[in-house]
Image (cartoon, rainbow over all chains, first blue to last red; front, side, top):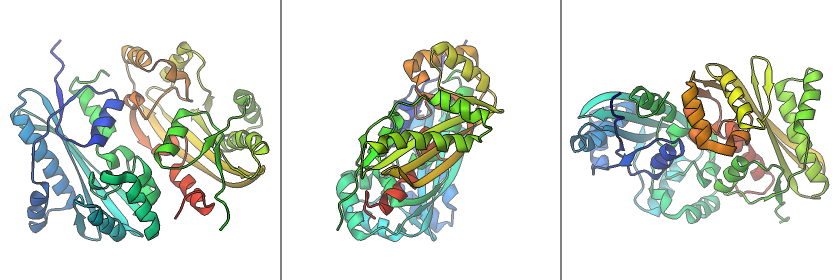
Length: 201
Length: 201
């Protein structure tokens, strides 16, 4: 029997880490710095689709880590938010998060989550999931109380919500895989990890 | 402005409690004892549907609590599992959980979750969600390792899985609302709680 390959998560997202831990997956974390907003801008200029952009970003994050982690399976992931043609990046301030949430209120948006696995800089697998979410037309007092309650988490993810927690109160409708919305299409990732022998079958 | 009504969760389920807490809902817990298996047996004898049975059980649990909590909103819930015509109750022992999981392996089952809100023993609202889940044909060594890992949690829910944790490794496919699978159709519950003034809009 060959050795079980090591799994490296190339993401600093708390939601992704927690999800893998709770599902009983053994892994380490190694994160490469990447100017995501600059990559997104250039992909948008090239008229890439949201799905292509999420996949490209997930792969870029994994590729840099893969180069310094020989033999390991490196899992990269990215989530992109699109509403009426506009791509939303993570907010940098509370004021910006507030603007994003007001722009999304009362509308449907798409959240596209892509996961990619590389070994020795070669892509072995990828999966992209698309969810549709509708934010209700919440009041401004509700929004301010929400931002007070979640604090810095407003800047932790695209969309500024935290759907695994209090952010669920922002929504009237959610269609799509809940794990993918948090940050990883987890059932599909687990399937690939069984295929690679990281998990037993 | 009238007082905000108190919300009482009439369930001892850890998953339901945690879900409401994480979503920022204020509530207390008060649980009535009910011989659920006896009620299920009599409903099955009367040829009730799985949906009717889940709704009846959710309401019975809430009704007993409502009688001793005047003026409060009482939220009752029940999850029923049906596979190829058979209804599964919670397992009482590890051996029974093992039998259930082996019977479900490689098959699709339906998980029906009903939530009911009563005030002063009058039903104000209910919602029933149906999810379809397919367990993969896992090996017996995998199953034994899984049961070792989750311990007493195997007897904590119908289906003996713990889909919010390691139990996700049991599945190849999940169609349905993830919160409902854990135990409450949460988006719909939140909507009703806003309607009742428990949550702000």
